[in-house]
Length: 102
Image (cartoon, rainbow, N blue to C red; front, side, top):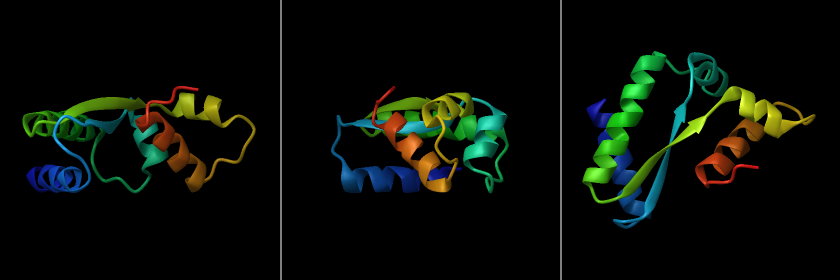
């Protein structure tokens, strides 16, 4: 977990400056984690621990890190009648991380 957090901080420092708002995706439940990240090997509990630790480390590094909840049911509502594709899932997560709710 330490290596993942260090890499996240490195990437953020390369693209942002201290004080910037940094959204970190946190899936709200096991179903959502498996739906959006089907190849993920972490348990849901490990995912939550990693997100919390990453947010804390980013805050300690001077960034305004926040958890953004990603929920499968919200995605399906947002998607409407469009196709459920990898691209549409990525697009949904991007809009949530950007702070768009509609």
